[in-house]
Image 1 (cartoon, rainbow, N blue to C red):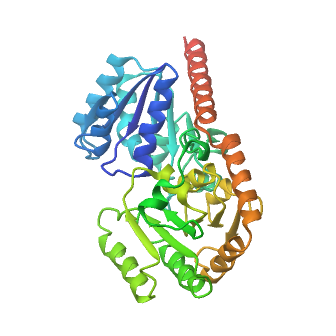
Image 2 (image 1 turned 90 degrees about the horizontal axis):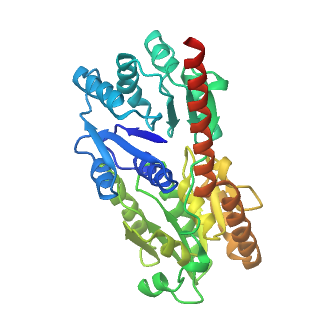
Image 3 (image 1 turned 180 degrees about the vertical axis):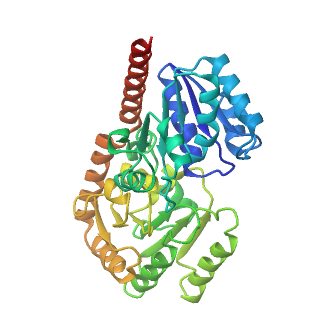
Length: 379
């Protein structure tokens, strides 16, 4: 199939990275994939590095020059399907499709929930042109029903995925990172990964670290990630909190790392304390690496982890409960092994890239077939 993936965003976060990830998976199965992105965006440059043909427009809403350019692109490139990765894209794509009079299936993936109700007349016109919306978790599916004109039969659940062969503990040296940061063999290394942003649970992580370090002398803690744009002060406050707690010598702040599988291989316990998460891809990565996990029972995390099977769960923000659950794993190496084993099994069954790709291609094929049937009937 010839596919146009769209993501009209200037940011560089989970949604944008996942657009490129999905495009690479589709191309890897023999599909012809092109991207539509914002001129000067990180996605445009990363797509070019990946060898993708990327069509760029500017980010202004109601820019008729952009809309006509996309309409011309749709006419000339003859796509089989258009897949928008951001709701904002509809303001560009839907008018362009109306102008081009092309009966191409239009899909929308919803990555992030919204509190804005979009059931006015204008949004009804936009969403009427969406043939199918894909929700990355149950909470996002519910959010789509509550905030958009889409009905349940126009929404399908399709979880995000990871390359489980890359996040495979059998293939990665677990001593490399421990050696880099001078972690002793008898020390238990407890970590979290992700960007520095309010609501990610760094405060609870450090609270648990402070409590546990008072009781155990063989623990080290690791926080992996960097500040999001405009959130440097928050990152600074988290590092300051470790100093105020008197645990800065036992907490390692690695900054940005591009070797996350190696980082995870070095850990003994993984914590995912986010207050609200549409899905939790970082948690999936940790589970794929056979790490026992302690995670908040929030939103999309409930699609990923299973209490008492892959993980211990706690109420978001409940730092004492988090501390107790982590201590349970510290004291129980057998349970750590059990959680790790079951976690990877769950990833391979539900969140591996090959499963996601097969499901997505099947959805594409069904949409193309249905659209062709509509055309045959109308003619």
